[in-house]
Image 1 (cartoon, one colour):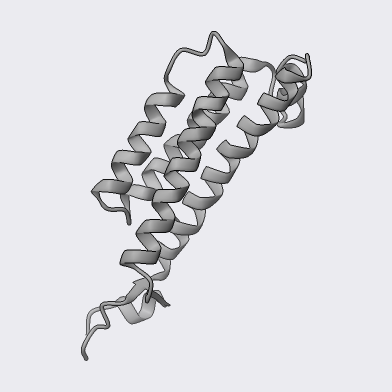
Image 2 (image 1 turned 30 degrees about the horizontal axis):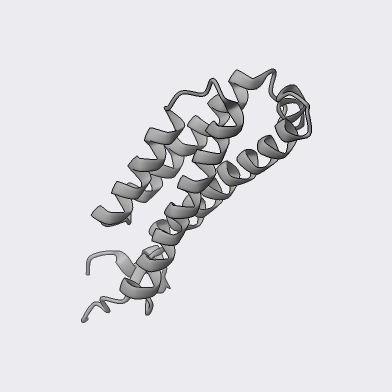
Length: 139
């Protein structure tokens, strides 16, 4: 049976889905944090909404989400996508003494990675179809 090169297994589709969700989480935390800080409040209110203790835990939440995101991207992404993901990682690990600037830089990195996702799937994988795990078993 000839294997269709335009299909992906469910487990990879699952990784793609969760990579997108983790990227959204990072984006949302950054946007909410920027808004909160520009409104004159501190990050404790943001932390409370996410069930966290303080600003350090908000930043750790972003780091943890990024670790899961990068791991998912490794399972399906090409070199360009990994380079963009690593660029976001550098921003997350950068100096956070100016929190508005810190979250703004991460937000820009998220947008860049999101654009790279779109290019990857539109240009390279536009005809992908999901197939079940059973179809991926050797005969």
